[in-house]
Length: 210
Image (cartoon, rainbow, N blue to C red; front, side):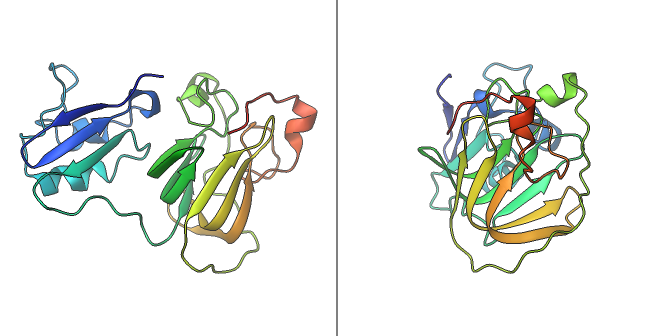
């Protein structure tokens, strides 16, 4: 995968990881004077105040955009609650104090259709595959958790495993479950989405561990 590219400005540096971008277009729609795909280079970190740019980047669901302040301002801090948001017919958007493999991050979008070519990350293959799964799952049993880091792994040919305090919500923000350990479907076949029910075995799902 290509390495992230950093665009240095006087007050803020913006890094972009193309391999994790899901083309949600938050950046262009909210700050087109800073992020313009028709321009080269497409990022101009001096075209808006650093705080405005930082606020926009925090809304990038995939974490493809990150920032570092050069003016003494605060760098991004993880939210107090680790959250897994279930998108209608789409991905799992995770935000929090996250560890995935060797990487630390605050935001990531993870595949739940089983079709992504960059698993465990989403590459929007669910659109081409016409993946269908509700973004409003029923409430499940759980209990409140104390804040802390969240470790994400992916089992070989199996589910995503989240160890640490997390809250699963619908795409509209309704809480579905709170837990300290979650097994989430990434094969697309579970009958209890977004949770794993072992269907990956019957489906013959193949995916590398992380």
